[in-house]
Length: 260
Image (cartoon, rainbow, N blue to C red; front, side, top):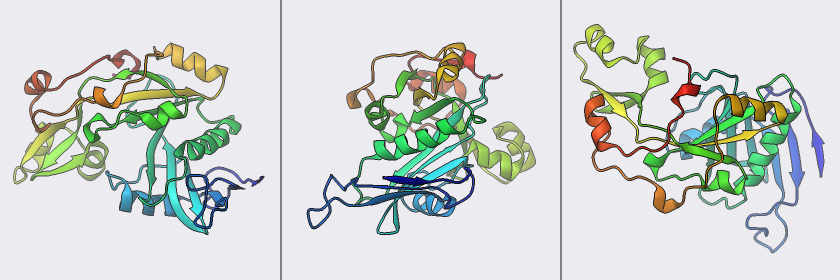
């Protein structure tokens, strides 16, 4: 295996190759070569075509896995969606094409190794498993990340004329994610708050400093949830806060670690 590196942030600047196969073997029974590049454009294309959100996030690292020069999977780390009291990076997107069965844990491991080598980056990594999409975080469990619990329900965006718009998109498009303010600005729009059902949160420390940050934020090491533990919606998550508290199941909370 060899590695050629350039600073994180330059598309195409990083490449790994090694005998990692699609389920271990290629079509002819030989180990299939998988190469790894940091490439924002290919990651964006994969996400728009194959990720359930169809939305790219701001990348610090967008590592893609290639087979025969074709991007098959992507792992994107960037600034967190929530404001934390300590600097962190969030694994915000993980995606692959349906026919790719290579180990995503290998892709995550390569990305973590790159981030660990960049000493000026935050030392704590977080990632959410979206229970609303029936995700429990099995990939993070396989990658040996720690589980700290399922957050409480929160407003993750708005329903505008029947279409879900994420909170960050609302801020960029309208200057606010408040349904009250948006109704005043655009009375012609039908605006309703949208609540998720609480995502599972996983964390990984790059070094001892990252462990200290995790302790400062109150991160826990809880037993992993199982697929059967994923909470299913009884009603659509379009409601006011009072109704949401009665219809959404929640578990542990770590709101004290978030900035007000």
